Image (cartoon, rainbow, N blue to C red; front, side, top):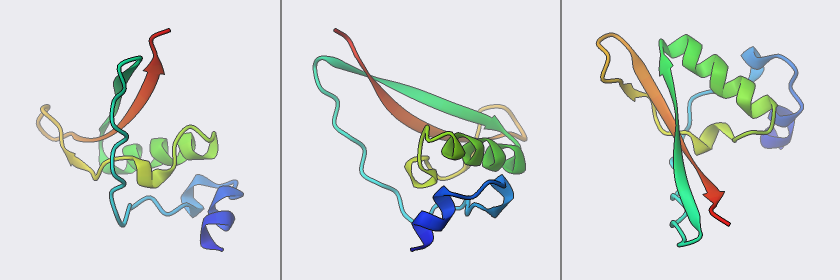
Length: 87
């Protein structure tokens, strides 16, 4: 029930942005290339971007990695893997 309510939310501040579990990544196939997508910045900005992409049905919040330190000092990162067909 909660999942359905989140999907129809119109305000990104209403969406839970902290994932509770990590899904297992989809194994790469020979005709598909994995493409990592990174969101780098401060935690609030990252959470808002992940929520905005969720509202656009790009990816569920739980598909993103946990928030981690980025190589740039003072920045954080979340990642997502999408697969693109090579055909």
